[in-house]
Image (cartoon, rainbow, N blue to C red; front, side, top):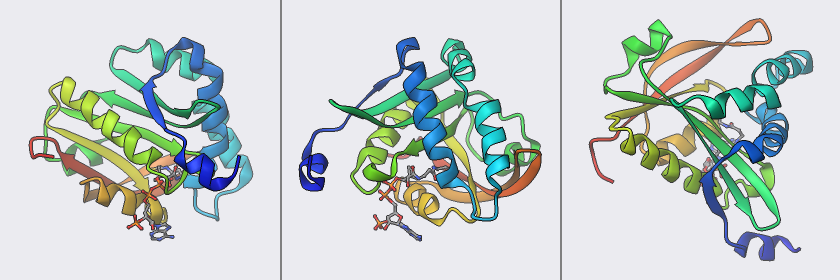
Amino acid sequence: MSDAARQSTAVSVRPATAEDVPTLAAVAAATFVLACPPSMSPARVEAFVAEVLSAERFTDYLADPDRHLVLAERPDAALGYAMLVAGEPGDEDVRTAIHHRPTVELSKIYVLPEAHGTGAAAQLMASCLEWARSRAAAGVWLGVNQQNVRAQRFYAKSGFERVGTKRFLVGGVHEDDFVMERDLTQLP
Ligand SMILES: CC(C)(COP(=O)(O)OP(=O)(O)OC[C@H]1O[C@@H](n2cnc3c(N)ncnc32)[C@H](O)[C@@H]1OP(=O)(O)O)[C@@H](O)C(=O)NCCC(=O)NCCS
């Protein structure tokens, strides 16, 4: 399929199910590195993928009633996924930084490179915000690597503001994140 034809093929977003576990793990393994700074070693990336993004972990995430996973796809292929976690954050820096409660964490939003800039991520985001609202959340927060400028721009376009910083453990070493938050009580 040509790039033009691929981009014009409709993207759909739906809640992920247990049948999607192999797809989620494959997309997660292919995309996690895209959010990492160039200085991060392949060994640290691999350790994080094995520990946090395995098929076993996705099976656990899907079974957790406080989590929600969504998949973006075209008829012929998965394009990306997102995961939300409802509830008070465990990280003290995040608890101090955010303003709105109850809150939901946008824990992961990852799209394959071929679908960057196509609107697939925006569709995932819209579905995530809808789920957060359905949980009566007043805000959504996320952590993003301070060097991940593309994602920060995407979040700003999606209504998020920078409210603080936190640290994020990858392969036994801490990375510096910004904490961003979106007020869900304001429309749109
Ligand atoms: C983050 C992600 C989901 C966003 O989806 P996307 O389709 O790339 O988002 P968009 O193209 O709509 O928006 C990205 C914006 O960043 C801009 N951008 C791209 N590269 C950039 C750079 N190096 N510096 C600054 N802005 C940049 C784009 O131009 C666009 O802004 P614009 O619409 O004003 O032109 C996607 O890039 C992704 O999956 N990245 C890899 C994984 C990741 O980082 N996930 C987030 C972890 S916190």
